Image (cartoon, rainbow, N blue to C red; front, side, top):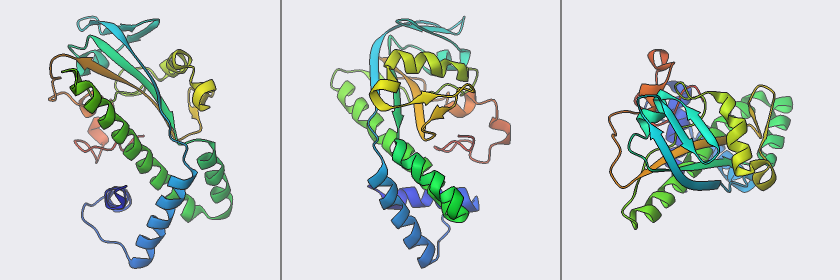
Amino acid sequence: MSYKRIKNQIIEAITGEQGMHLTDTLDNELEALIDEVKSLSTFSPVSRQSTCTHNLSEGRIEVDSLVFESKSLARYIEGANSCIIMAATLGPRIESRMNILQLTDMSKAYLFDLVCLHYLEYCLDEWERTIRDQLEKESLHVSGRFSPGYGDLKLELQKQVLKYLDAQKRVGIELTQNNLMIPQKSVTAILGVSPNPFNRSYSRCDACLKRDNCKSRGGKHCAFQ
């Protein structure tokens, strides 16, 4: 695992600047927290790949029983003839540890939360890289991840996605009445699959309704997650 990558992202999140250096004490604390998160995490994504119908003008994508009405998603995966629907979580032990820290040490809880966020992103990137490598052998291209809540893709679709994947039974992800996932460090996403390369000029940032107020725009990690 690349501690340097995760630490650099956390430093940028804390300071708002790239390339800043930490004190040895804080650097060691972050490494210890990354080790702790890694040991507590039960990251094991579930996914399904299926053919899709894609109507760019109407902003409508259908994957089996799922219907996504989103011009943002339609443009992001333009040209896809199948989709990968996925869900993942860091698991309940992360949630329990966070609850304890919030009661006993708020400053450590803040750092722990940042480490969890970026560790989850790291794991998702590694999973996505593995999927991309597998499908490249079949001469297929994979888009990036696009999650409910991005652009005009409604957060309410979480319920359908989790049901489609049987995610509660398989990885223990539940949904609150406000469509927030429990454990909190959980993600659902849609990826397009196509025999042709995707248009990389249109990004998740372009789809985001909060892009005008985002200090991280154009970067890899979302400031509003």
